[in-house]
Length: 325
Ligand SMILES: [Zn+2]
Image (tube, rainbow, N blue to C red; front, side, top):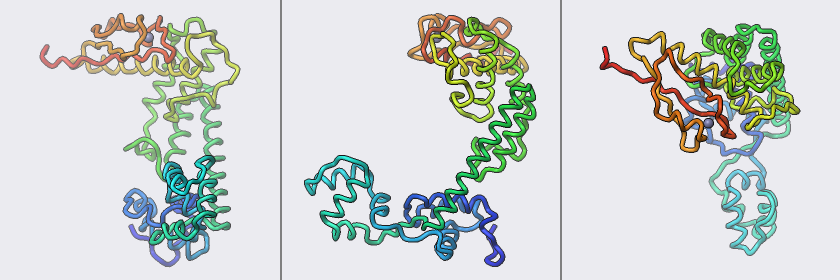
């Protein structure tokens, strides 16, 4: 797909806005050249989009300090400073300022042949406004999803998240087509999360368990490994591990149950699981290492008595037994 030169309003294109934000900090002009993912979402070569931004006065050549900061890493600047007998303390910009004050000619020369661009004030203002709006949009959808979960509206929660991901220029989850997202599996997981109480959390009150369940649900839906931002900071559970890990244990338990149910549906292929531990598993978990269990007699995971500070990370690996048929 190529964009027609006439009548194209880049301001209606999220991918163009996103590209503009990439120049809030100085960047080499051809940084995006040959990036097919960008060309696909822009509908034109990134260089054409960038040229348009330059023509409209939103992006221009970076000033020397920013250009140097773009070209050199902190270790490289420290090396240069040492060569000049200059101090190596401070941030990149401090080192750059000292180097420029000492040998501006050489520093300028070292940038020859490199075109480094950056948002001009107007472009920067627009780019930052866009990021702010995007951030607000995300917070708004997260709050909505959180509310749905708390009200037990799991399908609505999943669909709201899916619709948000479908809006993104580069959605997360490789190969996930969010426009055709089927929430069934996530809805099942959320149902499991709110149905069961993992034994490893048997000392947790029901109210606190519900907080962990909400956290675990948000972890699943947003594909993140921490639920801190959705749980009260003063939540005190008196466990061997932190609250985030506790929420992960809720999630782990639901996933495990879901997996076992899945294996049972494939009973002709999978009849048992083997417990795999990690090298730093606790002694309690290690007792299970390498043991096999028939699907109708599996131990509970996470292990009830696990004492590891990161919680139980045992895996019930399906044993595919094609020879037994
Ligand atoms: Zn353990």
